[in-house]
Length: 112
Length: 114
Image 1 (cartoon, each protein chain N blue to C red):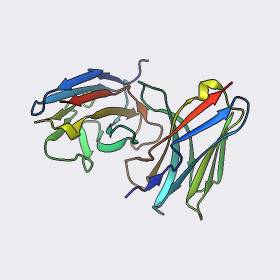
Image 2: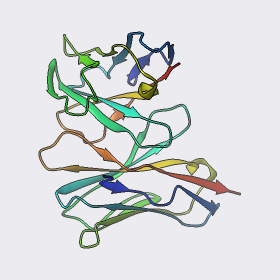
Image 3: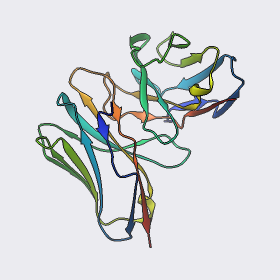
């Protein structure tokens, strides 16, 4: 039972364009969401997060949008850069729990 | 300071062998987590420590898996009688406070059971 789903295993975007990565969740108890970025042979690195009381959080080129009614969040990267090429994981946690539930990841490739 | 350090980086074990994976969290970090990442999947929670107390071990897949953090710093994940399905990357993460916000991950130990 996959509580956090990333239905696109891969995405290819031209440099300078917008990258949009999507994530869906099923557990209505989730109240905190995070995006992690992972390069090969490295551990995941925190990118950006959002609380369920917000619908948008922005940090430089990265913006996360949360649609609670649709149980959907997305990560926008604009403009995309070749260094953004990595695997992106969506993760969620519920109030008063200590564990993160991760999606299966989306591999982003940004080409020149 | 240094990030989360895990050793060994790679481990090859014969089926039935016991293995021990080490994690050195960031100095001063209270919380420590272990995750298992199978090929093509996202990390899956195994267990959580706050200082030396193991507060959640609900993700450990069987009683062959055991984790400890006796002095509230370094942690060891031990797998007894390894099986092929144990092959995965084992990730350790730590945070300054309790909870799971902004986990800092190590590079992981890639375990291959032959």
